[in-house]
Length: 440
Ligand code: XLS
Ligand code: NI
Ligand code: NI
Image (cartoon, rainbow, N blue to C red; front, side, top):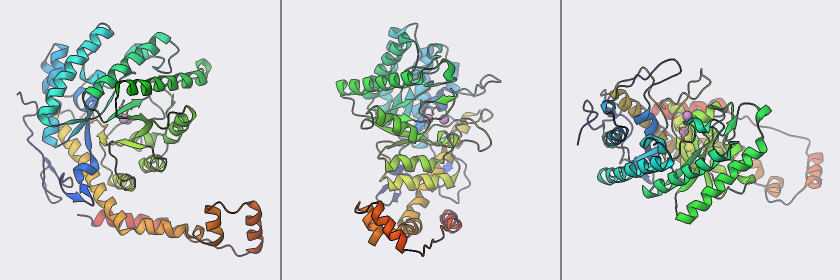
């Protein structure tokens, strides 16, 4: 088979003292951390769109990426060359999973029939490669935002013809996800949102979006697709206001429309920060609501207000997010999908490897530190102690539901000596630093 990345060979673990840029410093796939290998904790996935399809185009200029598969003219041949490159890339980085949109892997045809035919051909090509390279599909999804037909949204469009097209496209995308053994299926609300309420019936749009998702649930049952359905929140971009803005909003939506038992949440770091939250906050909120599904690992730029989808290099954030994942008992059947792209000026194919190494090492380091923090317990013990007044007497009675306003008023009237204790934020932050800096 043709080699697409012939300047890079297999990336191995060399440990934190290695100066070889083409090696892992912290990600040691088979090393056991607690009850399982790093590989099983992290379940890294490659995003097809940013890795194979993106060419570096931005609002000001054309693509810059040098990609050896691009010299093929025929669209289907190009799709196949890209796919071979994808599996070579995953092999060399020791990544076991990937994620794709239908339109990343196969080109649209002149109509839906031809588009589906293209997909079928690529899916069977993909299935063979997956078997040969021993790779798995973390999730599939449908691109319901690039084509101009989705100008007013897909599930939230005002045009019934577009709604029907979106339904047909999702139906097919679930079928191919099932065919490839996908463990999850993601709904990211591409253009499900609005620019102005002056032309928008928000209530009708949300009702319709829920109708579409109920149809998806029914269809999954009909074809016995067992993968987990996920919604991926994002507060803005491309629309000014995206309906699935953050975890809390999605939970409210799912509950209102009785979809909560069928969906979990795919949380993206850059979307969390755009919504004004930390990645850790969003993961924690999903976790305590039994809705943590999967993660899109990336990071934004603190100085820019849009979705820059950079490779994650912030070990503070990866530590605190892995802390939540460990508290969740793991992320499976979800994983850590690098929904991240190299910068437009990082246009050489080698940059893709260097970027993934940075991201994988960042989360491996985060996992190591989070595991130690959780095991030693300085944070857990502090938090436990902080709420200890609810463990006994009147505090316990509140928790057990045994008292109301009358009893509490009586208690307050008799208790004139209220004392609080420090929250010790600075101490706890320095403990996190100590664990991060000490870990080798
Ligand atoms: C875009 C989203 C997208 C989803 C999949 O902002 O992150 O890439 O992950 O449709
Ligand atoms: Ni994403
Ligand atoms: Ni993003």
